[in-house]
Image 1 (tube, rainbow over the protein chains, first blue to last red):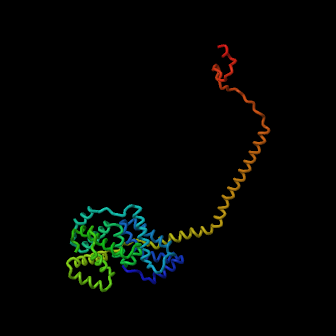
Image 2: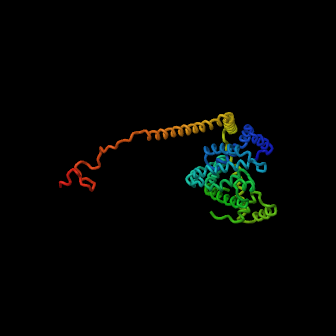
Image 3: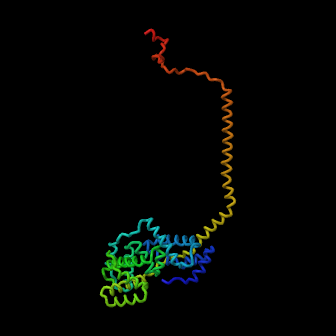
Length: 189
Length: 155
């Protein structure tokens, strides 16, 4: 997922920080799907994700005076999104999702010859595996594999050391692969 | 879940592009020959491809408009709040003045009542106590040690 050009962002951010709501709305439009997608995969609920995406941008507006140009705007925004989602998940006590073994069987029982369908099915298995691992592993995988953040940016976003990023990512991948293999019945090559 | 070995950490760092060039070359050469690291590296790369193939979820409406509307509404309320600020300041004075007036009035009334009570105490006639209700019911023995004139002596 490519990052939006920093000069464009900078111009909008500068105007938004001066109180220009329209400039901030432009930033929202630019990042809304990315933030929504990230939160949706973190929480697993579309309704929650819609609400939390709005909350994220409202918080971002309020915190905009504290934003420093040293921090990439998208990373800063994802940090707010992550904290907002984590708060919501904690409130709703859904930090750890229960394994959905029955759903795995359902997915396994419907193999399709069509390549497109097979691809969709694998995506479904991947997302299912993602939901089955702990929140802290899910978030770090999403930040690395989907948002393509560097170890440094992940460390800043999650408030952990880079060494921890490395080890947590390795554990998260191992956990996800284990789930993914189980979901696909070992047919994941 | 088993603890990943350090080699797994290194493989993860390799596909993340977080290894220095010499270490990267060394690990790639190793993975090309190692029966464990080679498949593990392929599996990690495949996982990355699976992630990259995930479609981006769409919110489905213009959140920019919604946020802008909310911000303008909030600003409008704040602005109208600023215009009302002197009134709001006066509104603080109103309860304060009312409370002061109530206090002064209360003190005056109280003082006046106390004055009236003093005057009343000076002027009020002494009430004659009436022993309408005698503590000793009729027919009972008299409590005092003194003989009762009503007939105890007779017993």
